[in-house]
Image (tube, rainbow, N blue to C red; front, side, top):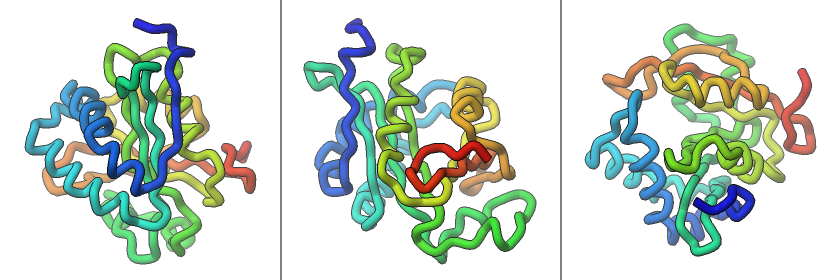
Length: 192
C-alpha cells in the first residue's frame, strides 16, 4: 500500500463529479457494505440515482481521493441546503425555528464522506473533509451519521462537530445523530 502522502485529494464541481461517478460509486459501495450500514447493490443503485440529480445543483461540490495511479480511495460530497429542505423535518425532536431556518447559503449539507476500508486511519477522511469545505461561505455544516458508526462519530467530534438531534433519514432507517459544525467567515471550523 502506498504511503498516505501518495494520495491526492482534489475538489470537483458537479459536472466533473458526475463524469467520475464510477469512482464515487466504487468507494461508496465498498465503504458502506460493512456494518452498521450493510448497503446492498440496490441501496447503492438508489444512492447513485440521487447522486446524478445532486451533481446538477448549483452549489454541489465534491472531493475525491486517489492514488498516483488513479485508483479512488475516498470521496465526499454535498451542497447548500435550500429554504424548502426536508432535512430538519425528519428529526425525532423538533429544534428551534432559528436553527432550522435555511436560505440556500446558510448551511452546507455534507451528504457523504467515505474511505475504502484498507485506506482508513491515515487521515484521508480529514483531508477529504477539509478539501470539500475549502472556500465555502456557509455559516455551518450539517450531516447525519449512524449512531453505531463509532469511528465516524469520533472523527466528527474531533473535527468540532456537535450533536444537535437525532433522525431516521428515510423510512425504515436506523437512528442517526445529526451533527453540526460552525464555520468562521474563512470557511474554517469556528471555535464557538
